[in-house]
Structures are given as structure tokens and as C-alpha cells.
Length: 302
Image (cartoon, rainbow, N blue to C red; front, side, top):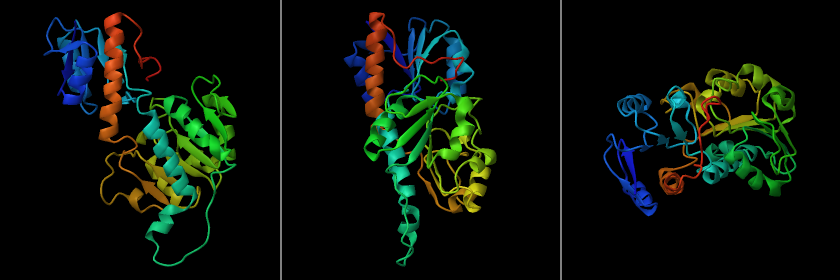
């Protein structure tokens, strides 16, 4: 029977998933080679635990993004993330934010008068998705009924089904001016950190919208506020911010035509169910000596 430790706290749902995979959850000691780490906010605690337990062979991390563990994943241990696990709810949220922006919902929900009769449509629009993982795969399915022409910009420009074209990062600047809607769905790495700044916003159409369901630091917040307040772009909807949580009174709350959701593209209820599936799947594979799902590439950072 596989022995696995769950740290820093084991929730009943994850204990059940491990049991269903035929694993025994035990306190971490020198005989345990598999660890499920549940706290994204404590990378230093994980680093210390790994230093104290050199016998560990595999660590399952809790989320798709592993930017908080950027230095840790360079260790000679197999790390897996939850990439792909939350693709459906996050893609759903991205679509909801996109429709809300294009149908001018932020303006409608606060007005107390009939107001202007104006809205954009997602139908037949040009969409640029920055990032080419599981969320993008799901988004392409959701966008298909709207007859959108989707350009995917990804690190590896291999063809993605449903995209009109799939291009490498070096094509981003050439494609931004063509997009009616830009959706950020990439991993946060040194290459993508603060990539979307005043220069990138100036390349976009003044009628274009930005949606960020990736990571807050992919966007320069001060530059986004400037782009919104000076009508450089038409609006933005973000589920992630920098800083996060976004403090009360922060200027982004009062920027023009902004929707901010508090990192709820995947809620705890959704995360528990979907991460339980990943735990079960990877424990079964680990016990059978098969390849694990969501293996982290330390060179790429995701």
C-alpha cells in the first residue's frame, strides 16, 4: 500500500480521495516518499519540509499555477500541479466576464437612469487568448458557438483545435492590434510577469476589452488603471489582481469600466471536488508506476 502524507492540514475530502486510490495517509516520516501539499501561501514551509525529508520522491501541488514555488520546483524531485483540473470553471468564468464587459454590464448594474443604448457583441469578434493550456482548450469550446476567430498565443505554437491560428509569444505585438477581446490564461513566469503594461495596452484597439483569469502580476496594475481611465482600452475584467487581495480603497476599484471578482473563477467547492479527482488519479498512477498528470517542467516554470 502506498503511504502518502498530506500537509499542512488534511481535509476529509482529500483523505477520502487518497483512500479511494488505495493509499494510506500517514504522518510524514522517513518512510514516506509521496507528499500532497495544500498551502499555496506557504512556500517556505514546504521548502523546509523538503530539506528535512530528502527521501521524498514526489510532491503534488494544489493549484495550476506554481509561481509561488518557482525556486522549490528546481529541486531534483518530481512535482505535479493541478494544471488542467480547474479548466472548466475557470473557462466558464472567463466567458462570463467577457460577455459582461462586451454587453456593458458594469455600467448597467450601477445606473439609476435609462442611460445610453450601447453594447458590443462577442459574435463574429476577433479574440486573442494569451496562453495555451487546459483553460484555453476549454475556452475554445465555449467560444465556438459565437463564431469567433480565435488567435492563441502560446509558448509552444503547436496547433490548438478550434483556434483560427496558434502562434508563438514573439507574435503577440503583431496580433494585439487586431483583437476585440484579449484573454490572459497563461502561467506566470519571469517572461510573462508584468508583460501587459502601458506599451501593450497602447497596441490594443481603443474598443478592445481585457480579461485576466491567469495571475495578477501578469498585468502592470498602475498601467491598467491609466489605460482604463484614459480610454486607451474599452474596459477590463479581472479575477486576479496585483496586489492580491486588492486592498479597500485601491485605485483599481474606482477605475473606469472595470469588473473585479475576488479570485473566484474556481471556488473552494469546485476546487475540493476537482483536486480530489487529481489526487485520486495521481495516487493510482504513482502506485502503478505509470506517468503522473500535471508534471511540472522546472525550466518552463509550469
